[in-house]
Image 1: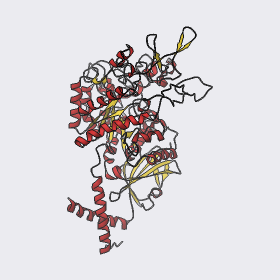
Image 2: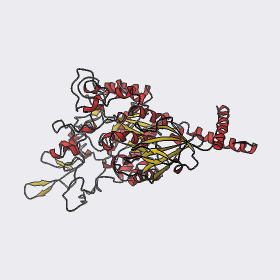
Image 3: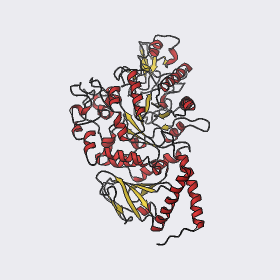
Image 4: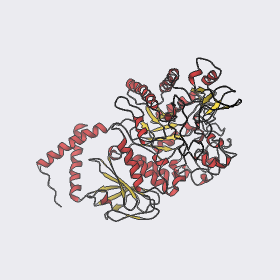
Length: 603
């Protein structure tokens, strides 16, 4: 086929390229968090550096290179503040000190310095809703000190008869107990979680000021941001009205209540906007963004409010839990597409999407979907636009350890409930030690160390990082490839177009002018199906497999010329690069030549 470039065509192409090149230059330096991959570490379970059976800062510091090898941009740690550990760090007794279990402040500073040397940003967990009942604020409040009494919410109980005192209302805590505990025969205090986690009262401006100062304390130490825990619980109804029941035929329980008076109150958004102002004031000084993630299990409409509004910015990243809370093994491609599209369409123009497959509160990906689907779920997550979060162990396919017995259970969410229900309520199975190798306790600590705080999963001899590094192909190596791929311009900046194909295949394209077009196909069927790439981009006449799930027949590098009849194996996910006809390829060659000239001019 003959391809002629006239002077007019050349001028048109040159002008288009100048515009494209300038646009790309504007996008060439995204902020450090944009399109990033964040790795979540549960500190008790990552690596034990001192041999006491519990993960710690020295152990984390020793293994930071793992994050570099994986390719992540930042790491978020579950709480490491001083705590009696009634809820494993979410009950904080000093917001400005480190729990001795994990080490010292010097150990934290050394870990942060090392992470920064390696190019990894560090985020801490900020727990604003409550403190520990052993925090000095609560000790002073409970003792009646007028300076601290209103740091927490105290209410008289309801008298029934001459001797019975009931809680102030019917509110139930997340951990399945009444949300009120009577203190030494006097008033009741509010706690939306465990009774050892009394709720702070943000209607007292001194509480807000203390938390503002705490944020500044850690930012001054070089922390790059926070993940803000359970933020939609911070404010409660000032009238303390009973929660309506969802089903009047059933008794009061957390699951059977409409939590309109304890969650998602409008005041919650304002407090996050004010904290964003603090974050931005630090960026104004040195140009470095301090990043905020917010956790709230709520509706899509409410989640979008966390981003901000026309006058205020809020969270950089309100967690998107759709792939955790909504997707199951029975979910069809249409539902995947709807969840993706709804999030993208609902975001404000300054927002950034994010995708999360697992965390410390929910069953692991390989347990929810099966090991044969863990890879395809990872491919889907990592090739969508925006931010991705990897929960520690996800990159090697760790599974829930359901062999943990009632006697071994540590999670208060399970311990506070009936024994017969503990397996349904416990989060311990998803928090077990990281499986580094096939040595004793999976290499969680040096030989001869104490038994880990939770039992290692029995499959650690087969499922571990060392084995996956040594294998020619593994989930770990696929994660490395995916993280490298998502740093390419098309996956970082490219357009997204989603498809739910008639044969129950989720597909989407990512395209960026001058950088090619890619297609991702995820077979959510337990059987082989046919795929026609022309349904995704009708001009496609050739494709190349960029990468695929581990057992897929379509393997990396395979060239495909029959693009309208591709066999996609059961649960396979494949990333294709799409090509058009010969004329377009010749045009592309000219464009690439001209682009190289422009690069030299603008260099």
